[in-house]
Image 1: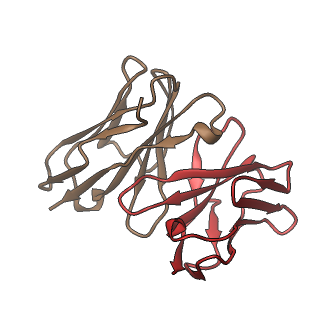
Image 2: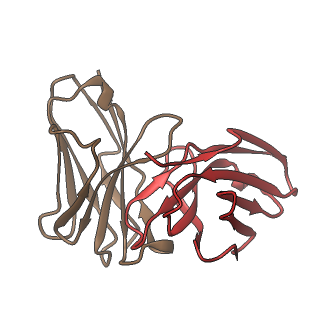
Length: 112
Length: 114
């Protein structure tokens, strides 16, 4: 079936630097694109989402960019901190925001 | 309300036994979801409730799996005649209508079938 996926399985970043996590998707009918953070032993935690009619959305230290032309999604984390170390999943959902389809995940390692 | 609660956190069972997991969603959330996550993979959707009505089931939810949400509050997921391939983290999530920021996951139940 259609799915979302990630370019890089592991990303190592120096503390204080900006992080960029990339994701490719294949479902053109997706209405929402979402980023989740998952720490060991915990469920995924919502970070930020973007609707398909937008190309950029900012939150606290995070920015999501959506390029529908090339079906690409990215998450930018500013001034990466040790607490940002986790696995990050991109995901998508259709209209009504019910079932969420997850990608494989990228592990972010922050080097102190 | 402290979020989505799942019980138990861990379950070890012998192959062929039945197991039941419980999920207590955030009280004002109408929607409740079950997902399954294996090591190194993203969660996979299993099923979804709007109040007490089960509106969608994944093909992953074989005949051995059944989920209920009898009063539109807590939900149970039962697996009958467990197989080793059922070993996974079972995650529950709840959301208000419209999802988004309110789409909240519990910490999951880790099932190990030996």
